Length: 371
Ligand code: ADP
Image (cartoon, rainbow, N blue to C red; front, side, top):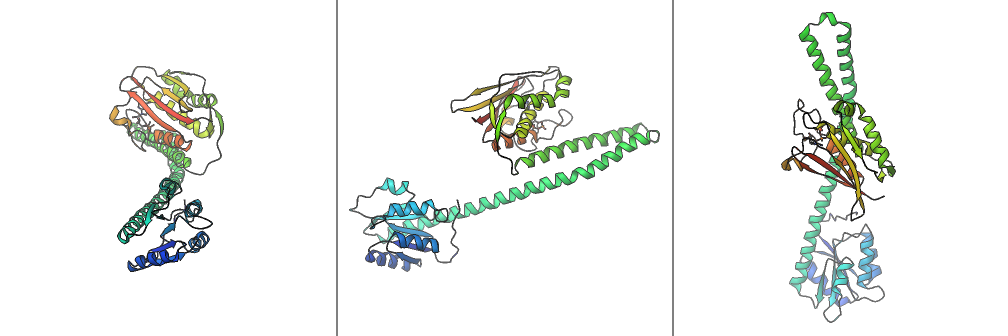
């Protein structure tokens, strides 16, 4: 919705009434309170006046010849340029005013004739105050969206530009290790190993940051993606870790989802990777993936593991960026995996949540709209 914020010092009110006496009376009341007043005698005049220069508020008579107040209101609310202007209906007490209709067509309030001056002013001030608050909220929202986009762009550029110097550092460290093995004593070799390990971690972190930032950027249209293919690809990509941990992974027939295949593989892979990583010491990971159709006709995909589990107090935080519950020595990671999962599922108009019991295991649920 495009909002119309009037920056003039005086608040401007458009009064629409086919009775000149009413126009005069309302105009006098409003001018006394230092409002700028514009007048229109019918719907056509009103709409062209609003389009030429948007007022801050419209007082609109319901009963007018040809096009009545309701129809005029509907036309103004249908136009993105004018829909945010508050409209207060005016109706004679003896008219059978349909109050429900007045609100359902988009009216903000109504005033009955004959006018009570104090009431007219109070209702107008209230609506103008609401409109001001709304405009401020919209402006702040816009600023937030913009600064978020700038931050994401910044994160993307920084991560991208960090890759090259990191590769050089790693490359030279490897050359030192290979070409000068005799020059290095045991301590120096250990330091070199530490440098390479830290470099590998940084490389992973940069890759994860880059893929996180990429999800927010403009993407291709969604296509039907076979969940069985996605899970098979994710399992294949994790083959080394699966063998190393002697994991047992089973899955039932999975549905076709409308989405982006690369992102869906990343989503499934992150969840599987965590299920493999956060295994209980001495117990091989047992992972089961299954799907069901919910009552509101969405697909529910669940990733169940028998790992260390997550405590109730941590559950609400684990989807935040960089939130980790363990040191890198206990379980390596960056804390971006689940934030990326959340971002992917939300960009697919779905949701993610987890049920877990410490020492028993966790089940991550993904809810997708049915394609
Ligand atoms: P990372 O795995 O890099 O630490 P994530 O964002 O993927 O970061 O996960 C955040 C935290 O949530 C993890 O550090 C871990 O404590 C917890 N977590 C995620 N998945 C599981 C799981 N399957 N079992 C237990 N804990 C998990």
